[in-house]
Image (cartoon, each protein chain N blue to C red):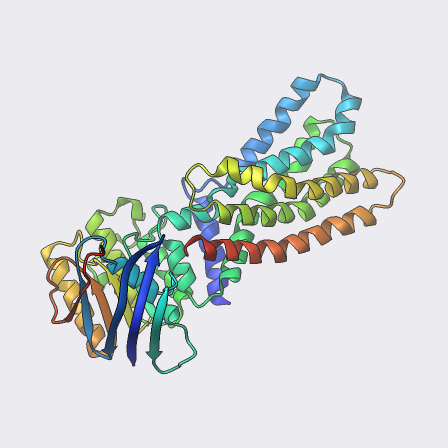
Length: 222
Length: 200
């Protein structure tokens, strides 16, 4: 277990040092959300209505930004070989790396959402709903992306292929994230239903993403 | 502790690299792997490290605990040095020490041993090629693993560092360790030699 936490700690340290790219997704998220009001126009009612969807789409795209380096950096410099030779089983290596990646990329998105909601004229209740659904939804997005990241670890410029591979798998998360948000703001269905499905998707992605990413890494050198 | 390899063969993308390779190595012995470029020295080391599956053959390790796979009793030092430019040597060694298990020498002491004590708190980005190699060698010291698989460890090392490397391996062997070293240059320690031939 010591090795597991050491790996999480190292990845967070690497991401927050110069060139680590922890802030890239967050800045991209900020850019996407700030240009939206300019594109749509100063219609406060319209902005407030589509605001949660804008935040969710922007968060999904921002998640895709940093994913390509998840395993690639360790693959390139040979660290992945050594990680495979540590006593830690490969799925746990993947789990530690994805958790660290989410802590520095996904979590800041969810925490920044209420502030960016101000730009979209969101009601406080809507800000809360988006933050809660993003907290539950971003881990799912990161775990789904992990499989794509593992498959493209050996490719130079694999970022676009990665996005094409994992985007379709992220759509259910987007659908239930948005529907949970709208349910929280009043609607025919209770909030718990889509939110429970969203959390379920997250847990499902955690198990399948971890295992399939480990398999993809193992298969990449045969 | 003993490593025995028999009938080992490997085919990479349809091309046989080597076949019917057999050797044994006991505690305290070192084996130098020689052969022209492309003869399979690195491939053999990667197979022994458990990073590549062999096409045929048996690799047997009899050590203290027979259940442990070879990848967890071996240190692998490859061409890629697994260094992160943003981390300091001390951070890197502490990380590998907790990750590889069986902690041995303290990271600072290991850095002193390879002559990098002064660079312990400097980001690894500032290290020269030879210093990076020495930092990789320090990794072998911070976690105890009986089998060392070294792929051209003396590349980029100066005369003094080469002597230091010889001492490290000699120490490891006297403590009952094993070492397999792929090399083109003569090694500063006595070894047996296994020559791989160029594949057709």
